[in-house]
Image (cartoon, rainbow, N blue to C red; front, top):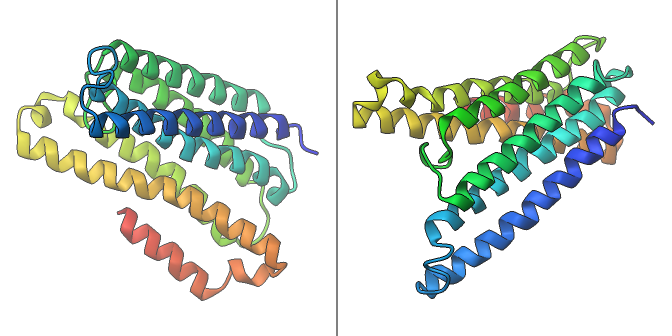
Length: 237
């Protein structure tokens, strides 16, 4: 057992709660789409949709983060760099989920599509991701030997999530916000790449599990495997 196992399982449990809540709001939004007057005044579709989208997205990268926290010490064969930083990551993530959800419940918006919360709440997301980056790279640098494909995938996914999230907030600057073509172009590019970044985290986990299930270490060093890494990387870019 690793000291970080409880942290990892807490991330995974929280991810499942987000998935369940996202499914409930998605189902409610689907019903309202078919029956437009259902809960129209008390809980309109304009609130249900961002709640569904945000919680399902949170499920994806929270589950991937939990998997990384669980597997990484076993891969590196050393403890996680800092369990305390891991809990700080979790606390900031939970705070951001609650704050963003509360804003949507109250009808407080102010962002862009898929990230419709007020941009000040983006500071929470950026903060916990920086903590995650520090913890991850401070741990993975202790790995000895040639990197398997999943370490490359996780590393690229984590870095690009931070980059694309910052890019998605460029609309705050008047130079981008005041030009609708420039604003829309950057938003669609940033959000598409952001999807690619958390896909990298998921794919890395899938390749790690593939290695463990098959019992073949060579699979995560094969040229064909790295072809899929570079395919995901070009799609991400």
